Length: 493
Ligand SMILES: Cc1ncc(COP(=O)(O)O)c(C=O)c1O
Image (cartoon, rainbow, N blue to C red):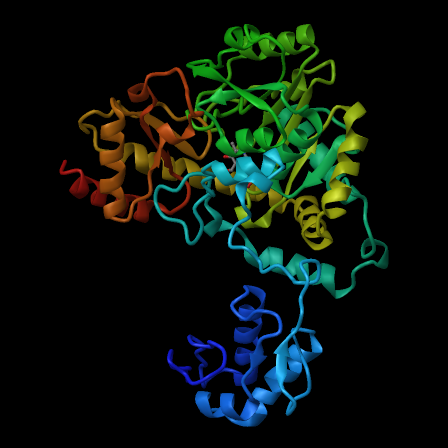
């Protein structure tokens, strides 16, 4: 149902098209309102009589009357049906402004909004995992039956004390268990009052950005590094300073040369994405740097549970004697990312402020997940699951290392992989990186480009930024073998 363009009407209503499958009165009301708002139907314009409009559109007069009634009730038209219906006088102040497609750029006041609009923020890949997705653990092994049982038990008779507004820092029982876990597994001695439960590591980093960054201040980040952390800091107003990463991790001597920089974000236990572990010498230098500059360190230990040989080095937070390290941990790499549960261990002087800031965002994390995780840890399932996940990740790592083609033109040999869920292999040029990744994509294999982890405008020559980042834990060995066979075909090896 449409009004022909040369319709015999006192006003031009051409282009109105009604779909008989949908509410006709509503569609007509919307079409007329749109024309009134954008000025195609000017104030005081007389609308056609309802009978004429109905016959032109091939709809019932009642339908037109219902649409007119709505416009009349909302003040878009006036006059009585029968005595002529007119578009109302809508002054500039009362005329509602139609919602623009995109706000004009000159009205954007907020630097954060501008950054979010101009930066290319690549969200993590979603959907069922595939080889070789980065950042995803073996969540096919999660004991969902146990989780469901604990969850049902909690929700069957939740204590009323836990159903009202809770502590913004998180469920006390969970915080006690996290503190005990960190003491035993990382040698990190902390009190539950220092812990703030978050929605994953990302929110922990974002909270640090919100509370520690003064707009315009310089903040050091690893380059290449975890871009989502850099984005969170930049949105808070930080001027990011990329610091190189070498075989010992973050180049602390280079950091020390940065003037007016008192905050650094890094991934010491398994640098993201290169996979290097920060050496003990560098750890001590970094703590010394913080002391000398009155600085703070955000230590992101996102995948610290995955260590395949030797004992892990003590986290910076365990070596910190001065309250200069904010430690970020997450359950998302041991359970599954969609769980959205992580935590911060804060210097005692900062804990209260962080909890208050979090209360402004979301009051606190949802109680069910926190309570079930607490029960999961208390009953020993968590420790068992960590062992299961570590051994699965090790087996999957071995499948990749053993099956990886040894002669790929332009590609360095695979590194030794002692930690984490991914590895990084250098490629000799950006062009070759693109070629290998797009051929892999063609056969359904996901490989991330090392070049995408660098800050824009990095001094490192383009070709030296190239490489392949491969997550090895996301899928079982059989799928890894299949993916490797597909890569051999795609890369003609
Ligand atoms: C280095 C690093 N930090 C933090 C995160 C975020 O983890 P979460 O899912 O707990 O927010 C990721 C996710 O991939 C990561 O790679």
